[in-house]
Length: 259
Length: 206
Image (cartoon, rainbow over all chains, first blue to last red):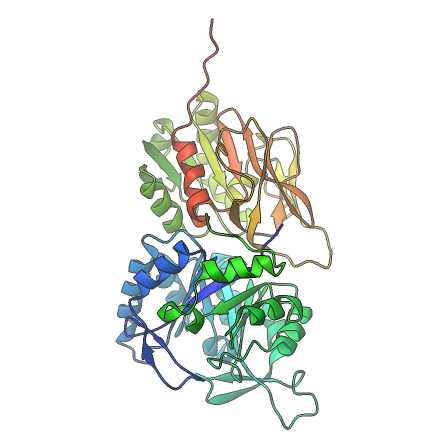
């Protein structure tokens, strides 16, 4: 039986893992390679490294970080942040990533999804969507808006509609982050996740808001997510993928337990 | 143990090379040097992406070279599209023939309410006589990412259930294939690669 995936996310800036709360406070949470290896050992099904370095000089640091992290990692490894061209993607693949996630650059030039998919296969393209509900809208879920630039700027697209276009262009997966919930540990946005998951035929990874085991149970059942991403819950020894999965299994969620 | 890994510009070789080296293989890469196939001790054909990419194997003359190596008894492992290539073909690229070592063809998952591609960790029902999957216990999982799959036949070494049962591994003598990615399947995947490296021809006692 296909299991629900628990994905450990490392936000990386200048070669160090950091964690923000609603994209603001930044706390140092260690070395990416060490953290990735630890999460994989403890049963994370996949590692996502999101580079939030804003500067151009950061690119070479990122490739070095990817190379170091990939060296002894034998689970799927996705890298995102600042990938603006098929060439950027190629460099990241050569450094050892299995997938890239694209976000702002794909909104600016949707053909980027087609281009990476054609060269590296749909399985290698994850389209990341930063979503924010519009509390003024008649239907906050259906009208949820896509945001760019770390959540500062609306992209002028509706979330569900953009997810569909990404699929049509050859994305292999959608990584959906609820900006309302991100870093708050109050639970995933299950309604929005379900709306996207039902609208597309490709897997949807839910992100933003993980705080308790119950949050994961909910996003897999009510939220119809195929995978869930967690960052802050795994840092500083708050929880481990192993203990999370053991509890999920007890709650009846099909997961891969580490050997 | 020397392993010749074939680069046909389909997906990412890095992960496969890294995993093979991790389990002690001396891995070399070729994208068309037929000499390397003639002297190969073991061959791995990786691959993610589109079945049409295997056209390059025909264009570079690798297809007959691999066929000859297999006939010599060289252990061969196809991964993902590399496994599908062992069959007669795939509906993903009907104009492109496979090696036809196995007579059947690969097809897309049928329409259902479940998602395609099949992405994530799924389990294996291992057939008792599989040497490639020796030591893989119930409750172990491997990583898949694919939309096309091979049918279950007498040569199937493991069955996985998603939408319908399909062949997640195939094995006949020295020719083996896995639909999943052993290089991305943690400790279980590395164990399978070790099995491939230690695979020896069974000699019939006289």
